[in-house]
Length: 344
Ligand SMILES: NC(=O)c1ccc[n+]([C@@H]2O[C@H](COP(=O)([O-])OP(=O)(O)OC[C@H]3O[C@@H](n4cnc5c(N)ncnc54)[C@H](O)[C@@H]3O)[C@@H](O)[C@H]2O)c1
Image: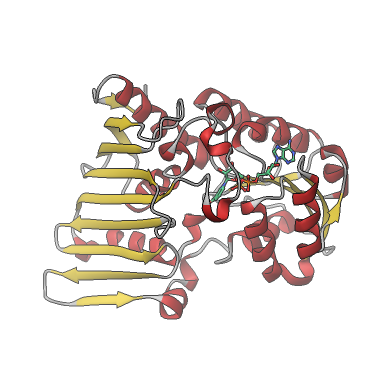
C-alpha cells in the first residue's frame, strides 16, 4: 500500500472525463491532478482550467506524469491508448465500450490482463444504489425465482444537446449505435441483477440513416437461471429525454421496478404477502452503503485499488463478457432474429 497520493492523468478531456474529474473531488488528498491531453487543445485547456490538471502536449507526457490514467477518448482510440498505459506499467481506467468490435475488445482485455496492472472500466452502474438494491431483492429467497425482466434504455441520440460532439454518428470511431454505445450498460446490469445471458434473438433498425449506427433495437433474452427477458434500446430525437431507464423484474413472489434516476431511484417492490417498499435518494444511498465494492463512488474505489495495489471493480473481464453478449445480439439481428448462443 502506498502512502503517497496517486497522480491521476487523463487522455481525452470531453464529456465523460469531466464527469470522472468532478467525481474525483471526493478522493480528496489521496490524489494529485497530473497531466491531461486531448487532440482538441481548446477542450483540454477548458478541462484543465476547471479541474486543476496540467495541460500537456502528448499522450506520452500524460502517462509519464501519472500513476493512474483515465482513457476517455472516443471508443476507437481506447486500444492504442490502453496499450501505451499498460506498457508503462501504470494503472488504467478505460471507458466503455472497450472497443468498436469484439475482436478489438478481446485484444485490449488480453493486453491489460497480461500486464497485471490495476484496471477498472466505466460500467459505473455496478456502483448504483438502485441496481445494488435490485440485485439484493432478486437474490432474496423470499422473492422466489426470477421469471422475467423488461428493460428499456432510451436517450436522445448523443450527437447533440449537452454532448457537444458528433463522433457517435461515425461507425469507424463508435463501432456501432445505441446497443454498443449506450445499452452495453443495460446488458451489464441484466447480468448483474438477473444472471448471465445464454442466448439472444434480436432485431435492429436505423431511422437516422448514419451507416452502421443502429438506433432502435429489440432483444429477447434467455438467462442461465431459466429467466427470460426483453431489452429495448432506442436513440431518438426527443431532447427532453436524456438517458432514461425503466426496469421491471418479475420474480415468483416479488415484483421490482426501477424508474426515474439510474442512481437514486426510486426503486419499488411488492410481495405476494401484501408487503411493499419504496426507496429513493439519500434513503436509498444509505440503505445500500454496505453493498458497494469498497466505496460507493466508482472513482474513489478505483483510486483506493491503485493505492492498495488490489483488484479494482468492475474490471476489463466483466466488460468483455458484456461485449460478447452485444456481439451475439448484432449477429442475431443480421440473421433476422435467429436465436444465437452467447457462447458462439
Ligand atoms: N460510462 C459512461 O456512462 C459513459 C458516458 C459517456 C461516454 N462514455 C464513453 O467515454 C468515451 C468518450 O466519450 P465522451 O462522451 O467523453 O466523448 P467526447 O467527445 O465528449 O470526448 C472524447 C474526447 O476524446 C478526444 N480524443 C480523441 N482521440 C484522442 C486521443 N488520441 N488522445 C486524446 N484525446 C483524444 C476528443 O478530442 C474528445 O475531446 C467513449 O468511449 C464513450 O463511449 C462512457
